[in-house]
Length: 352
Image (tube, rainbow, N blue to C red; front, side, top):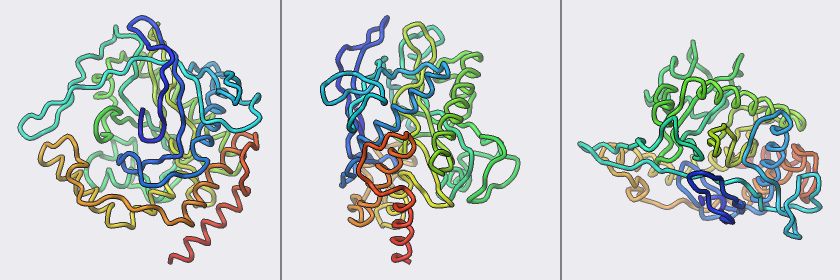
């Protein structure tokens, strides 16, 4: 399925009907589009599963359609979050078809062919990641995109040069590709074209994104977290009705903060940004783009190192504590989130 979860197919989707599958959330993690990293983070998979399920259930109470069917408990039954007695890493979902764009290399440029998508196609994953931003914390991709001239202020919906730590007066919405080797930030016009969307469907996507943002913001606020930014993925069902798929509202899909401290996968990203491997990775991506090489990882001169063991423990506790407190179901044995954040501050203090 991917670098952080696996997919068990129970019933395959067809052109006319959705299928049934189960996500098996693992303790693996990924940063910078690398794929599986050399460590596993204890408890991460089950924590993501609980957070995602809780968000799905809250959205469905608002009438937002999702592909979520329930969680699989220890007895093998599909249940709601409120029926769980212990953590699980298995979520049952409806499945749709995935049509990957064809890759061509023309004049040294990697091009992606999205001709499969049209406004009449049904039962498929929309090949986009839909992004919301409520704030611009340090590490936000906005600053990198602007520095590399890959987007303009107008593309982002900004009327001024942003500063790290800025809170936005209203959410900014953005979109990137989903099924390419590197997620590529694109305009809404291009997104509409490659995904085969009508104007009404594009408007509907933004409405659903706003509801998801609001639900995640409210859930995060229950434990003092600020919902800085995040993403959702969408699909059309077998009637071409829009629904949220994959998972949302977790420490992997969102960037949360607590008094300016990262509480998300960004903690791992910040660690790796200080390593020589990160420099090699960035150079490999640049070289691949310049040379028209689809597999940029083949050009990377080094492999990622393991996390510092002390930091890995902190990250593990962060995932489990966030799952406990964001959902209100205390299924994990972990210190309180405020204590974990204090431990992270102490760790960072030791490193400076």
